[in-house]
Amino acid sequence: MANVMLIPARPKAGNNVTKSEKPKLRVAAYCRVSTDSDEQATSYEAQIEHYTEFIQKNPEWTLAGIYADDGISGTNTKKREEFNRLIADCEAGNIDMVITKSISRFARNTLDCLKYIRLLKDKNIPVYFEKENINSMDSKGEVLLTIMASLAQQESQSLSQNVKMGIQYRYQQGKVQVNHNRFLGYDKDKDGNLIIDPEQAEIVKRIYREYLEGYSMDKIAAGLERDGILTGAGKEKWHTSTINKILRNEKYMGDALLQKTVTTDFLTKKRIKNNGTAPQYYVENNHEAIIPKELFMLVQEELVRRRAVKVDSSGKRHTYSCNHVFSQIVYCGCCGNLFRRIHWNNRGCKSIVWRCVSRLEPSSATEACKARTVNEQVLQSIIVQAINKMLSDKQNYLAILQENIATVIKTSTAASEEAIDQRLMDLQKEIISKANNKEAYDTIADEIFRLRELKHQSEIEGVTRDEHIKRISELHDFIMQNPQTELTEFDEALVRRLLQKVTIYDDYYTVEFKSGVIVDI
Image (tube, rainbow, N blue to C red; front, side):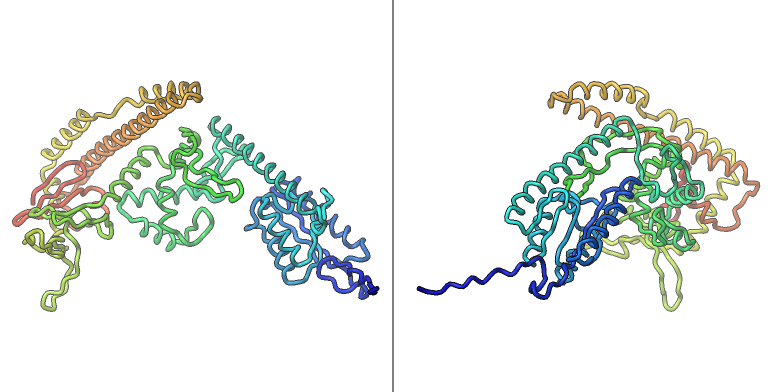
């Protein structure tokens, strides 16, 4: 009969070696609290103190470290620096065992929880969950872990839904939540209401003013950087995207559009732009405005105008440019195309001239334009002559301006905003009562969208009308208040403010002002 000798298994727990050597287990603890509140901060400190004492009391253990994430969500491990450091140290063989309070402290994402527990299990490193009394190295450990991790994930999903419902309720009440720490121009009072930061508000006003004066977003950003002005986030670098967002943000005129983005996955926290996925709420006059509504609307109109691509007679596309006072406003009287500024070297004589783009970029589809080339100094002289012509014949041009104001008022077709607002209020009540009737809900929703667009167009028309009248009044005041009969030199700031368009013909020029006055030179 064969002899059978039993060779007992060596007890293992982590990366320890033989029992005879009796090495101490290198035990690490992982702690986490999920918010930044004072109560949770106390819990965070208590966990660190508890596990330091807990590990040091066991004579067979030695403290390998306390890894603690403060104020970080457990649904995703990407931003949990200490957790990731713990895993890295385990993989490096520096830890034999991990202790944590509960599965929900370790992870609320089932996949992540099991992924890391299995990763550590493959390296013979157990994870002990104190609250559930589960050791991942036990035979029943993975079954229990799967169940508990799943429950923890459901708890997190339920919490996420509750938070969403709370936010939705606040939106319905018109309560605005803004991270004012990164919001240029505003601060918050003790009640959480937005209040103007006077110093930062001047920066916002500067951005709006310079944009309407013709500056590009690049030039505005460069000017702010040159003057050492910081962004709302306290950064020295200004991006055009930052300028763009400031120019489009309705909060600067005192209103607030709520729920601009929505969370699509409570685990990854991924947010997308809300293009009808969820309801939005628009709160008018929520807080004190930095930018008057009329000025804000003018900027929105200018944003649209600059995005528009002009197509010339040859089919070429030209985008907006504001590199020079004459950019985008000098046109060819022969073919209707724009003139472009170029540095010209004619037989060693260097100068800056303006030429029709169809001469610079001839097309085989159309006959080359023969419009003349105009020296920039000549173009400046033409503008000065046009202004002087108005100043020398004040009574005639003042009468024209009065007629223009009457025409603008007479042709105004802006819809009644009060009537639109009243109808929108009625529809708001209707849509709530029809929430369970999809067909009726969609019909009312379409009507709301149509009326909102109509209201927006009405506001734009009203602001455009007021701005036109303002431009007429501005030229009227300039003519009345200018004691001179002649302008002696070209004034770029004045030209940017008054000039609308210059058309170059073979033997004369047409200068059109923003007030609607046209002067031939």
